[in-house]
Amino acid sequence: MNERLFGIHGAALTLRSQRMGVIASNIANAATPGYKARDIDFNAALDARLASARGAVTTPGGDARMLYRAPTMPSLDGNTVELGREQVAFAENAVAYSATLSFVQGKVNTITRALKGE
Image 1 (tube, rainbow, N blue to C red):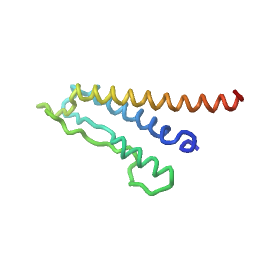
Image 2: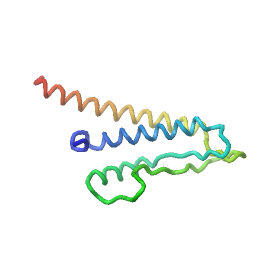
Image 3: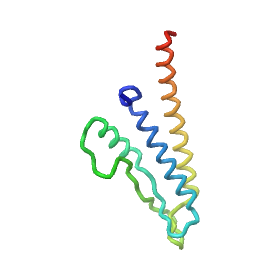
Image 4: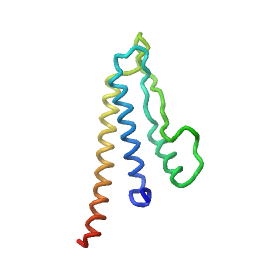
């Protein structure tokens, strides 16, 4: 039902939310020795989620493809978080999340108006 009603936007909203949490965790651990920055491969995770919704067989381990980021300049304590890079990724993801949410809200508003007969 969700895929028929919202297309890929319902799944995209969920994945963008998960990605925002992962990036926020990276930012929070920027000073933690040995912490490895992670991210979600959004395109692969979205493809897997949509394939799963259609009943296709997907790889085990869920649909959120967690990856470790390769640092440009690793720190001496083994931490791979690059704060500027994380902030840019967080901002880009927040804009994409907001755009997807606006689309879903527009769809809900259209359905609500149709049900009211407006």
